Image (cartoon, rainbow, N blue to C red; front, side):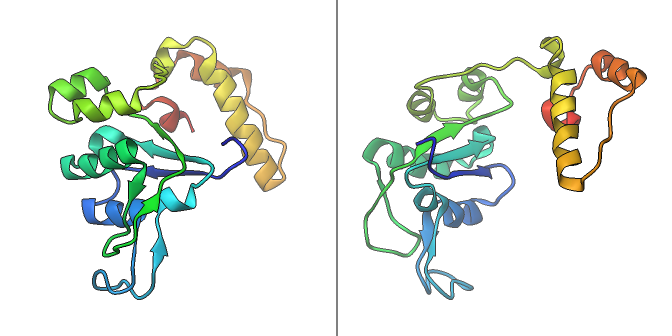
Length: 174
């Protein structure tokens, strides 16, 4: 699936209704504003990967829908009757401890076990010595490519990056 599309969605940034439409798509007339059929991210990611960021922010009802897709490999567009096959790898992330999220009722235990086929625990940036500097250099290189510039960090800037605890992790660094 590495050659396929890589699509992502922040599950905490959308309402349940919008996330449902974004993931599953919808048919014309399914709701006000549905003027045409629309493929969802599950369909658009066919043969590739769908990244679900902040999975513990997903509403419980939406977790049930996602669990059904993972269990059966099928889904329906909102308002649609046709059963569609899901053929995308699902990768999920959260900034919370998943087991604690289950205990707190934020994440369904059965969904966690469906998603945790190959868990990759990633410690916070402040616990990964040297990573902040490497990531900052990579982000700056990307900006230089986009802008056609040749900016670089000063020694003082690198020292500041190394010393800062990065409570907002990589998002804050970027």
